[in-house]
Amino acid sequence: MTTYIIRRIIISIPLLLAISFVAFMVFNLAPGNYFDTLKMNPQISEETIKQYEAQYHLDKPPIVQYLYWLKNIIRLDFGFSFVKKQPVTKVIKSRLINTLILSLAAMLFTWLVAVPIGIYCAVHQYSWGDKIFSSLSFLGMSIPNFFLALLLLFLVSIVGILPLGGMMSSNYEQLSTFGKIWDILKHLVLPTVVIGTGAMAGLQRLMRGNMLEVLRAHYITTARAKGLPESRVIYRHALKNAINPMITIFGYQLSGLLSGAALTEIICSWPGLGSVMLEAVRSQDLFLVMGSMLMGGILLIFGNLIADVLLAWVDPRIQYH
Image (cartoon, rainbow, N blue to C red; front, top):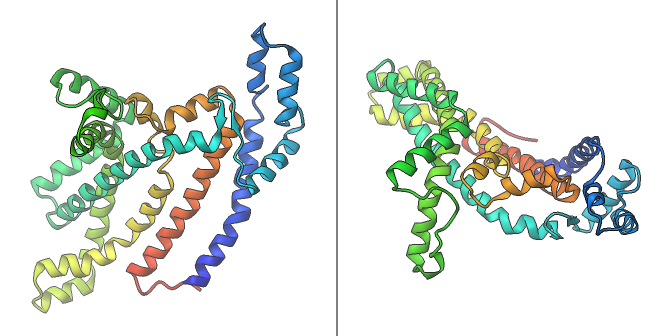
């Protein structure tokens, strides 16, 4: 396993290079750059703009720009954000924790709800509970996240139980430690439900299908014929094999932690990377976009690697060489 992990890490280096190169070239297909917007400002001279373009090598062909960017990345220098007027690492670091809190909360909510419901629906196939949960899963998969966010914001504004947006209240600093945690949790409920609803609906149906397939297997019939308790048959034998495809999906969800919550963050005013990335793309903030893209690529590779390792740990039949 150690050899396999090391080999995967080595292979990921040229893969990240390819991802970053394609992203850099695609980004440069858009005409102009950030400094073109400054040319409309009469207080900034053309010489000053040319000086900044030369400083950041934006006056050179895209391939040369990429090589300069890659040289800085090797030295762990992610560049400077023109919009935020500070290093890219500082911008990402200031919002990264907020995005990870929201994404991890959504993943936790999704898996803790979807897996038990999927098991229940498979064990009680065609019951009223199965029909109700299946209908709700279709509804959850059909509603777009942005529409669900707007709908919940409207309902919350009427009921007034939860905050309408943001991450903390205006009196956050005056609260006790427990009060601060509770305040963040209240602000976390709405975006967590929005992000988790669609994913939960899909996972629930997948878990139900996997369990139904496993429950029809001959070894499950044999286990029941031996007189084993039904709970042991379901949770010890059936679940162990039905969970394998879910682990692969878990790896993909882990890789999408930074990007999956972007739209919801913007609608719910959650101070994460979503609004920052939207602003960076719209203003052609090259280095901020590339820095975020590189982090997303690393998470994609890291998430798939974790999924493969967990799959081998759960199922001894799977071995990597």
